[in-house]
Image 1 (spheres, rainbow, N blue to C red):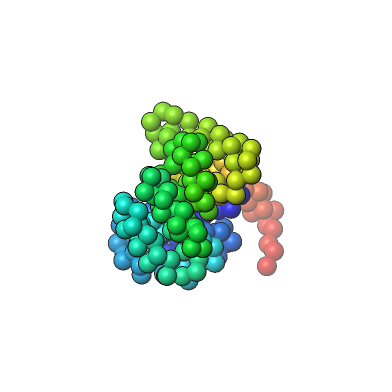
Image 2: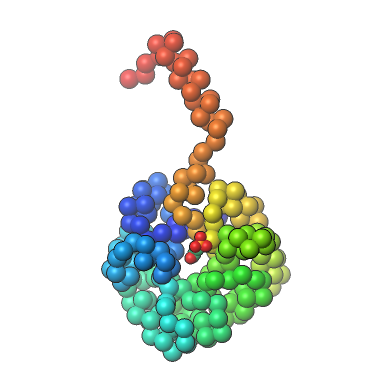
Length: 217
Ligand code: E4P
């Protein structure tokens, strides 16, 4: 499973990138707003830092305006992936941009039927939002599972990008189901390393090392 990092925080992206944990980046208008920076400027900087796809989201809601924004974003760098909402206008823009050779990430997907439409429109990625479904007491992972089955039934090449990931457990579940990509906030990726038995085991080893006076360099 590829790891995308869901942030516009350059320092956080750099830290994970240096560890080989970043196969791509996703942003959205809320994350750009949080960064306090100009969308074109910060997106360009992210594209220079990582080799993989960097999703940048349009803010227009009608197809023609989405296309104008999408084409403008696509000029930032060759690794831009234009992010479009899963509306009828978004699907129309997806088809046009895909035909022009631009990568498209269709976002705000909450159902297998929406994902089926995005695949038909040629999306490079579909982003089903796990956490936001869980928030309304539905099971976001069920949607990932259903999309996996539907895409595999027909050989759709659209990649499932599990989004709105809120926990390390979401990462594990998405990987078990076979999501192609998971995009997670930096903290969630860091938390994947945590285990209380690792901490307890290390504490015991270090205590024994101190008692025995073990020195390596
Ligand atoms: C990624 O593409 C999405 O914008 C993001 O994962 C949304 O996450 P949230 O539901 O935690 O805001």
